[in-house]
Length: 267
Image (cartoon, rainbow, N blue to C red; front, side, top):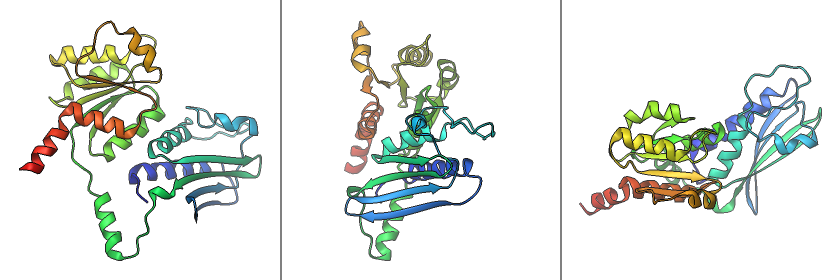
């Protein structure tokens, strides 16, 4: 499978952890089945099940299934992270459940992401390639949605970026002294009622006394752009949910990584 190993591991870990959390007796199974469309990974449990009218909410941040007075550990972020990781990896997820019967979560991996490996040398080559992440610069990621922040941080780290994270303007200000000359700020525009990603960027640039490169993300990008009175230098604005290739291209462009790589190849 051609995918991000760390993100896939996080996805399966969260699905299995959630199944264990809500299964007091019976079994939990992880299966993998191939057909003409691709690979389907399934986590099947015999747990308490989920009411039909609650299925649409289980991927919401901090939402937990009603356990009828039984205390369950955690804060309900596991499936919110799963939802974001599935989106980042380009997979599809489906869930079926019955009260007192259990739950089945299936993750569909398209055939385009699969390649037959027929020789040990091919397996070794693929493994060594996946275990050698590229070394890149540093990112300050500012995102108040914990599920999105954790999944995006995993993705960026896998791509070779040292990643600092902040969930608020205050946390970002505590991190900004760690930024170097070509490091990039990636910030959600809507942070809280009092601050925006642009507010934080302004403070970072004032502290660093330079136009720190930045990417501002928004789920309502047209409205955000209409509020801007003047162009924001050295900044890219991208829509959420952001395409991972677009995000990486913007980071490389702003940090100068692409130019550095081309110079290294020429030398």
